[in-house]
Length: 312
Image 1 (spheres, rainbow, N blue to C red):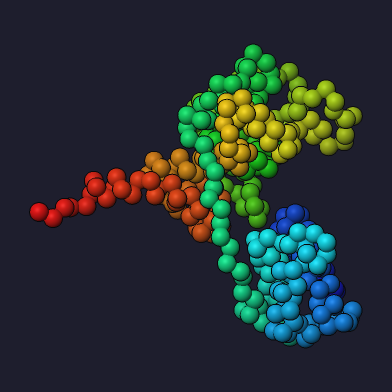
Image 2: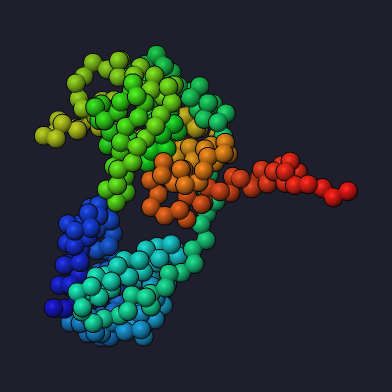
């Protein structure tokens, strides 16, 4: 089998056996087809075989990947994007190794060092300022209040929020399950205030549509067979969040993910264990959660002065 046949097998394996999301499979397809394209150029051959992928080919591939944008009339790929390409390649090589197909040793694929950007978050009073801008006399206002409270109280990803149905959330127990990245389920806990705001919104609705949050635009397309024609999209939620951040006079960039960052930051600032925060965010790796530990830095001096004994 040539490399393209094996790539198709690998993508099917990701979807069926590994249970990866459709988006993840699409990204892997893009990254690995680009890899095969570059390798064909390096080796000047189209019928690539697994044995053609050597350490030297990997070296030249990484060099071309680093220059990919400028050599194709665009911007160079960011380091994090290059890392995603290499993660996909390493997964592909591991798959070949498990099938005992001789190719590049996956352990030779080292990821570039990625400097994570410091996360942007809102303080509690900034979130309150946003909420105060909402007109609660309209159904759209009640919806927007419920959206912002749910993002902040539950730490949801925007895709998780827009996929919720009415029957997804238990307002009495104030907890429910969501399916996040990697098709992993995790519990979400919300405050009483958040539950009350979601209930206010649902009580104001007169429809029987299943989606928890509906788009109220008058320019909606005709009803489709899925019944989800009015379900809010991640982009529409993003516009809602940005609207009230702007009205509140918040100058920094604010998105639904900013509220998720704020959720995690608030927990850590109030003494939550980082492993617990990891679970509540649905992070597979603790290192992903550690990007939030910058918030504890401001408290280090206070902790030092409070707990460290002075010499006499």
